Image (cartoon, one colour):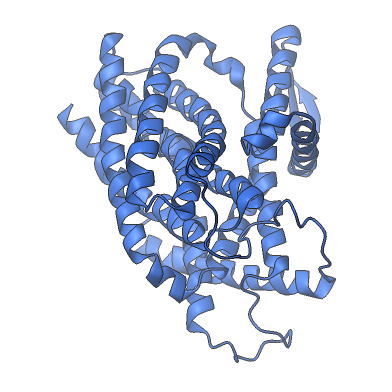
Length: 407
């Protein structure tokens, strides 16, 4: 931790430590505030927003900015998605084939609607179409990474000097809205239609609210960590090979697929140094998934510098307000009926709330909070990450140039 030139800088060790503190803060607040539990608001979202607001208050009153080194956060993201891949069975993937295609088709259609909404609202402020795209799939479905990647090109090609700030502001507030949307939508659907899981499924992430106790030995935990590292190494090699072929994907995507491949292609009887079977869907794997996702999201939200967004508030809030209404409507009137109007569909809707305005981790956190309260849904935890962690990036890579060239 260092203080220099009016900036309080937290090194990776302190950033992770504070992320854990933020996670516990969110739990304590959720335990004390009933409606946060009732609407399945993820604990890291609660804690992260509180801390980001406090950091903003410190800056506005003292002029001291707070910055975090977030390299360790990205490692946690790889950990989390690798556990999702390890927990995926071929049978689940095959059974999820039709729902996967349906959700993918809806999501691509929604991406068109999101860009058209952004362009339409931007035109009301006499702003050029690329500004609307920055408030569309560039920053919302695309997230901070896509916004950072495309903003310099948009700024250079279209003369929009504040492109980076607009993209990051939209991504930041979109992340907040996405974090707050999924749980209430799922609760509304589950309550209105009295939905329940068709069978008792173990959770892919964490433990249910009714089962917080349980013993996990250190060897089981190490076995799960070893499996994650093996899968991550394979995922890294796949990523390197794809990059040589001209296809650049986030590392967590290839690690997700590496976990799927190893789980489904390597025989269960394959000898391992641990003397145990491959640890798919074990309590230790679910625990690691819960820890890595919660800490990642807490670190992401606590590090938001909200004061940088004040000057862009008017157009951004208007665009995001319109995007929020479109996302809710699509979720309730398109996604839920198309996915079968059942419990799995309600969990998918909580995840789509994260996809539509936020990021893949937000979608997973939304679904995890719902599943821990109401019950597991393997289908949702298979198709949602595949759609939002892989196919969305490919679709966005085509849609963004299309809209820039034609609007």
